[in-house]
Image (cartoon, rainbow, N blue to C red; front, side):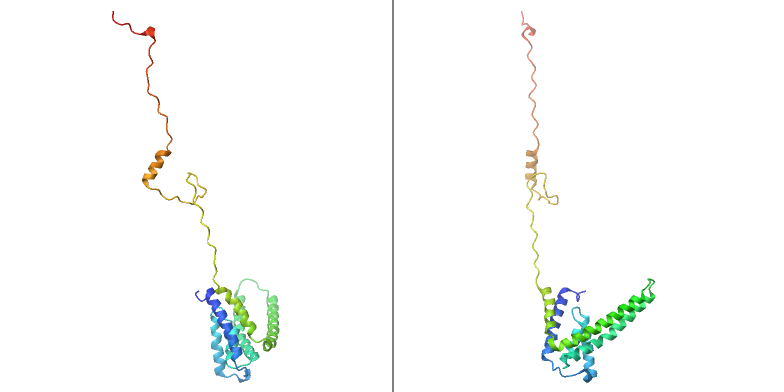
Length: 220
């Protein structure tokens, strides 16, 4: 999982793109496929295993190794595509075995048509690529990989979310998730004392005076 991180993919995309261009510029480009020996074939095969690292092109790393060994551009690309034939055939046979064992019905007519169209398209694309390779070289492919990998290494800045203003000092607040900080106990008691509604104090009870005609006579 660590090898599949964006940083690793960006680095391998840029580094192997630059190596491809350096091998094209400083390679001898004199050897043909007919001059391929066992040692050179093994070195190119070992380089193909580097493609297990994400961001590394299988065809790109094999062409890089062949160019570094002094092969011409067209011969390096041709041998790289020949190396892919066993892998493609093995993957196709394994998938065919899975389809034969599957309980889901398979339309073999459409499957065969897709295989034929894919093979013809791949052959025409490889022929066009081989003819174009001697004319443009590896510089466009290096620039493509630089443009592909460089933006992944640029630092991304995200705007910081603005903090909401504290709510007013009332019982109702428009922020339901806002927690009001605790106040000291003395301040809380003072606020609760002053926030209680005051009840009016009843006046003291006074007995009414009796009328004058009801007054008690004095002693004779």
